[in-house]
Image 1: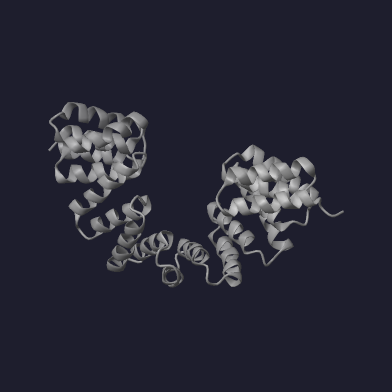
Image 2: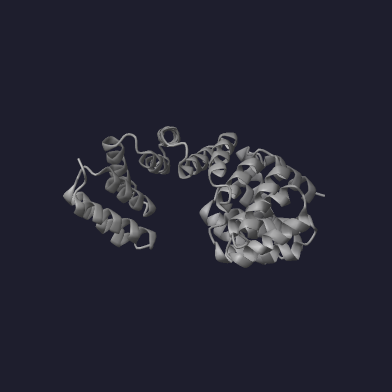
Length: 325
């Protein structure tokens, strides 16, 4: 049976509104279509996709599951459902729908892309590479797909090959911060520090608050023996991303090494409040206390780490032994 003309009009309006970025108007149009035709799979799929974009996972799953039930051969509905299921922790169910989507429509690059994303998230870099190679065959000039393929290849340790794909992505779109960031990280792992620095700095010129690029630029400065420059990068990172605990701890460690125990303690304090039993944080807290003249308190912390038996117990023992001489 052909769809009602008003249903078709509302779906087309919803698609136009969606492409224009007006999610509220698009959702309103799709709901209008479903009010006329509750069994329209396209309207269910499109509305479910919008709800997923808004992270309304319950609503998204309701409509996407309905779309698949109404039209089991709709590859895009399976692809969207797979993403939503993975987002709520049902990863294997999500993967099954994504594989089904690529089987139903092997020419749907979006389905291959979604499959690659979920596979990489689960640690299956080889499977992600396979999916993204299929996507790149279908859309060879899409720098986003080339970047993701390069990321999967880098995750398997094939850094030279990854650099080739990522460099191509930056050539196709010099304004793509994601491509520059991943290229910079991969070059850093390859120990090509000069090229890595240029790529990471290009990332930050495009996206100043990129935490991955900022952190790797700091690590690069450490590798080059430039602690002051590393400290500056980490200060910028934690100012923009106060939740970046690993970078805050790295900053505290570098400040301690420079002899600035007061600044180190200032950065350790929020970590102690958030993770009072973290042995890494407590180990460096002890070092900061001793640097500030509070040796008894520092020793007490180290002795508690010995009793805890964590992997940091040996380091605590080494410090206690050193301080005894």
